[in-house]
Amino acid sequence: QVQLVESGGVSVQAGGSLRLSCAASSYRYNQYTLAWFRQAPGKGREGVAVIDTDGTTKYADAVKGRFSISKDTAVKILYLQMNDLKPEDTAMYYCAADSSVPPAGILDAREYRAWGQGTRVTVSS
Image (cartoon, rainbow, N blue to C red; front, side):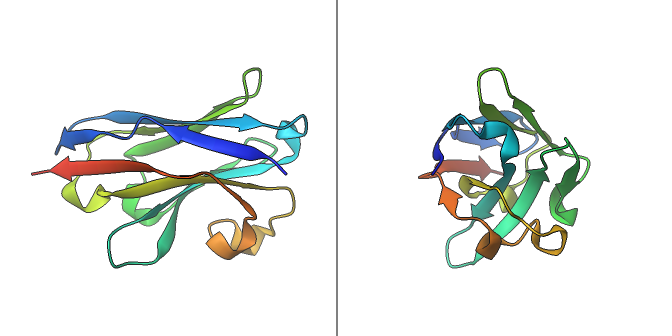
């Protein structure tokens, strides 16, 4: 089972930028679909961005054009570059991984078995 550790969450003002990182420990890193999810207080966990094993990316409509997901396979780190942040982006952000995510569920939290502990992002207006 892959271990995931997020970092980079801080408090920023609206319009600012932030980059989250997720370090993984697994020799099978290239076999995992990797994703970022977030959970705001009182809400469910929602998919933000995903990068598949072939490098294909997908984004939630709410973050398209503002967020960018990438990975460095040499050091096994997943990134989420967040630009033009809005107060509604405030949430706990989690990275997730799984080796058998169906295309239809690529932004569905139920399809991922490995999770990090989360990193908090707060955007003030």
